[in-house]
Image (tube, rainbow, N blue to C red; front, side, top):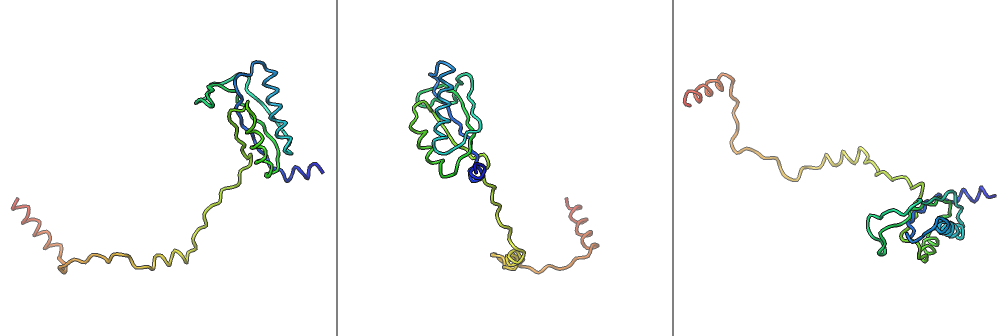
Length: 157
């Protein structure tokens, strides 16, 4: 029966940054355990959880803090529980930032290709501007006449 419940749950990864004022490794482990408890409280099943050993420098200050512990938790949860988890995590003062990412995002929808009949209709439409016509009718000139005219032009140069 437990496997049936896992089938309707989706895989997620919770990325979060903890405050740097955690002095001991036990405190860091306690905070990570508290986050995992929040996931389990909304019906999630934690698969893996890890944190970095030391506080890292952030790219930009968050809540006037320049360092933090980067952590991740992988878990299974029903899609309806994600919103509740966000609300529960928002209340925690030791979290600087967090985001929940779906491990298996939906496939991109490709645009539908147009049928050949639709493409043919577009080519049957007359162009918006009429083709340009020259004002004087053109006469056909033989190659010999063209050569004579070119020789005359070259001599005059």
